[in-house]
Image (cartoon, rainbow, N blue to C red; front, side, top):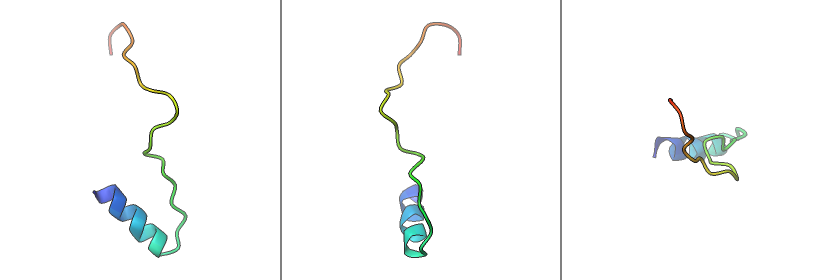
Amino acid sequence: MLIENAYRLGEAMGLPVWCADQTGPYQTIPHPGRS
């Protein structure tokens, strides 16, 4: 909810809002080995 509010507030203030928290076209999948 905090991020959505920040996007709305930024757009209302005329700031460029980049949606860097959204996932890309690739899904994350588990890989073998230690993390």
